[in-house]
Amino acid sequence: MSKSTINKIAVIGAGSWGTAIAGVLSAKKLDIILWGHNKAHVTALAKERENRKYLPGFIFPPSLKVTDDLEGAVRGADVVCMVVPSHGFRSVFVKLIPFLEQEAFIVSAVKGIENDSLMTMTQVMKLTLGEALDRKNLTLSVLSGPSFAKEVALGLPTLVTIGCGDLDRAKVLQKIFGSERFRVYAAQDMIGLEISAALKNIVAIAAGICDGLGYGLNSRAALITRGLAEITRMGVAMGADPVTFSGLSGLGDLVLTCTGDLSRNRTVGLKLGQGKKLPLILEEMEMVAEGVKTTKSVHDLVQRMGVDMPILEQVYKILYEEKDCSLAVNDLLTRELKVE
Image 1 (cartoon, rainbow, N blue to C red):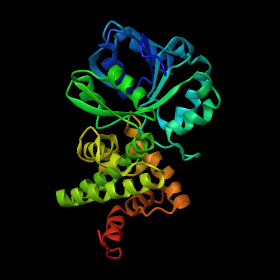
Image 2 (cartoon, rainbow, N blue to C red):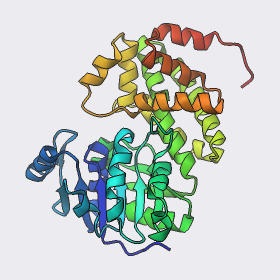
Image 3 (tube, rainbow, N blue to C red):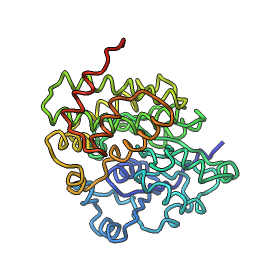
Image 4 (cartoon, rainbow, N blue to C red):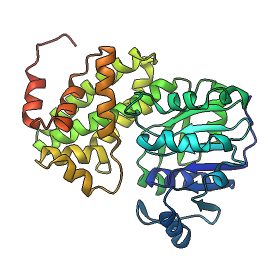
């Protein structure tokens, strides 16, 4: 059993979500350290005690430390929370493996699938850890759910799920991350949590496209419903529990990301529907919209696994083949009629 006494937590990734998580944990009176890869950015965080670039307006608590020293962040940490975008996840994680403590908890709070390997983040961690996973008795887990960073930082009520193959260990993490305004549920279906968290971003791009085209609320509701069906099909094909997709990380996060104005992925879709080109949209954005890269990963997974995902396929054609948005919607609506 991994340790139940927690003294130090390292949050790896100083974007908006990493900063929000570090802020939540800082209220726990633990040693919390936030790591960022960019020295100039970290220097600004330390000086201003605020993440003005990614999460402005929220002053760091005195207990929150910041650093660009990866070894210093991870050494002695009982919990390492990974909040690095999926495309940079592997390179950062490989570097920190030598510094992981015995019986440490490793939490992925990343919503994406790696492009080349088509792996989820826990699959990447398991592969790169190799024998160290068992030798050090490390615990891999996933944090997911409807949670815009800004609202978490504001202290608005938020509910998420933390998943771990060992439910007792998930309950330990549940107590570590949970607070009065940040309610955490425990679960065991890690692959279900990761698949739903990653794929909802693709559906959010599609929802944004529909909104950008002015198609109305009926279209958005239908898209969310059929998108959930596609996510569930892929998840079950990968061994997930179908019940997971009706939970916080599934339906909850899907509704939030498809309807919320703070959603980066919906914003990408909205601008595409309004006629803007993808390169310009991405150039204008400060933060990563995970759904763009995840769309390619899932498209490749569909080819490998043969799962029926028509919405995903049309989003892929819009993003990577410059298909006209209106034509993509028309092709979805004119497919052969089916039984629900």
